[in-house]
Amino acid sequence: MTPLVERWQGTGNVYLLVDARELTQPLTATAARAIVAECGGDGVLELSAGSGGADVSMRIWNPDGSESEACGNGTRMVARWVSERLGRADVSIATAAGLLPCHVDSDVITAQLAPATLSGPQYQPTTEVFPYTHTFVSVGNPHVVIPVEDVDLFPLATQGPLLEHHAWFPERVNVEITTMLDRHRLRMRVWERGVGETPACGSGACAAAVAAVASGLADSPVTVILPGGELVIDVGEDGSVTMHGPAERVENVELPPAIAALLI
Image (cartoon, rainbow, N blue to C red; front, top):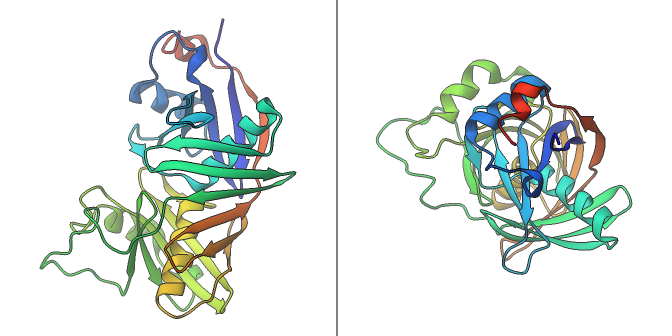
């Protein structure tokens, strides 16, 4: 039987959810690349039995076959997926970035991400010049947040891939371009590591809010306005980060036999 693949979206980010418990062989980078190439989207979310007390475990595959430690929009999608199956509002998700508690209230999903840090092994400045004023933020995965006067004028298509692979980031980096509107609102565009420019990035929105608060430009909560929609981010003094936003199932996806054969 062909495994069920579900297409979900949250603020414009589209992911394909695959329940690994339905597979007879492990999901691989080759299979993940093939699924995205055939079905579109910003990546694959592989779901498996929960570990460490979690209701489910989530593994995040980018379109290029690489993996990510965190995915904010994906976390909300999985939270709603689990909530619908368990019939309760409070669920938890095990990820490479840690155990993430979530709450589902109709169309609004609240997810707590990994605590934010402004340094770490994913950020290694060298003598090579970095071309922009920036703040590094990790919420389990690495982000560089660059404030500009107008996000629409920033050449993200050309600068995004260069910054993603800049020498200061040994694991590559997600790039967020931000413009403050007032002390509780900012606009953002994002170049996602292993993906390219996308309509939204939940972990990137969290990083942008953290950077704005840490730089003294904003006060929590911060509404992050993305091309795909809006997310509200609470930033705690202890580095805690909580995200509020939508997520919804779009459709079931039938895989072509050649791709299904990579999974069963």
